[in-house]
Image (cartoon, rainbow, N blue to C red; front, side, top):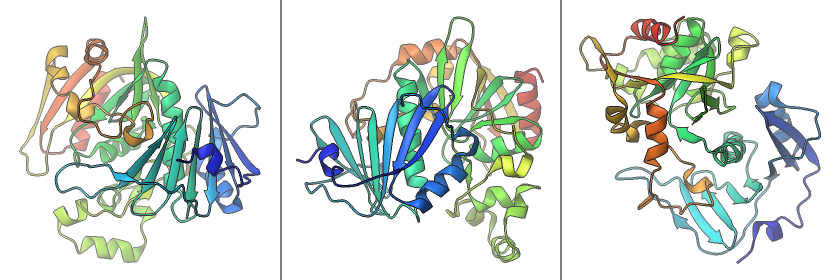
Length: 351
């Protein structure tokens, strides 16, 4: 069984991209100029020149590596396509992305990705974010499966089942003047006086259905794309998996993204395209905790401290109970209504 450090011994990664997310320094090293340029463009203001000792070192190799050994698929539930397979070695884990063939390795303070990274840059970006999140989780934060926006440092998180429109809702709130905090993951921790919220340094990655129905972001589509999407039935358009990154600061200007703030509210989007009207209901902490599957998240295969399978994992209910007792939790049912959602978040954040 080959440890990743041994596997990487013969691979030089002379190009460096030093990053800092909030107060977490991460050093990225690569052997490829195109990968380096792509990361510098993607992370923008998070690229730093300081020489701080990194919390994580992430090496990115354009080219294949083979650790040998047997990989075991990670199940995702009934009917869902397997995305990852894992192989554990003493003190480390390999993760193989089944669709792209990108190989990743993780061990304390280190990670790597190898394969066709130029064409699949989102995968090393996800790895970098996982390393950042792992550092923050060690401080006592929990991870929410939620989008988030902020007003004057006050944060509202948006959670819900798959397809509920978390990303679309966040983008409508940005259009209404809110700052964007995070697209799909939010790290939170109750502190003595506030509930700290930290977003992932990741652009929103959205489907065509979101872009087509957004008055400003629709301009990101070509005329051919608009015609093709207009010809689709509404359900087919919303379910279309052709995601793309949206650089919000390029669209709305610098300062549109704020990575941290104080969590004030959690909005559970239980509306549906076939719903009627719109109903809002405030939940007490105990009832909100019963909805934990809607917003609980972990690092899955990217967390070497946990087994690859989720079966039998013990959720730290007391930490979530404390969190939910400190913030407003509102359940939204009925039909999607983004204008009404803006009014609701206005009230929750006292805008």
